[in-house]
Image (cartoon, rainbow, N blue to C red; front, side, top):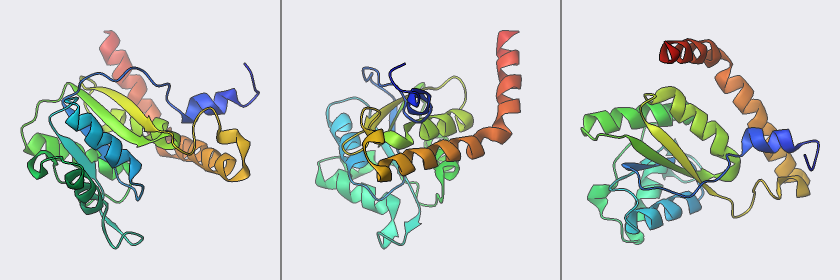
Length: 190
């Protein structure tokens, strides 16, 4: 352990792994351009046949997060028909639930999914989608760490607050799901 707070780094930030091809790229809502830009680059590199941005109306954007992301994707060369639509989500659990519904409605078989999100949001996004999607779906995260990363979050007060807020959100988001995870794990072990 290099720092006493390394456990916070491990809690909030997912360790990155080499990106593998997937059946779909998921982009949880937000107002940053980088996750959709990265998702578009992955699509254009042949890493998945679909991108599914998710997000409802965002006052800061004056439109839905889905619309915002779709426009970015199209401007970067992603065919509109390859950008699936989920424009109702209001929070991360909505992003995951609604995205799974869109996948089912479009009869897309997903064995492997790739989430593209901000690095400080990576653990909460991964845990949320893992809670909603069936255990048979392998989920990987690609992180946008342009500003805040596991290597630098502790270097200024704003980023420290951001990461500590994420740590609190993780604890409150998932407390009610722990008993279900235990039961699910016990069933899988039988």
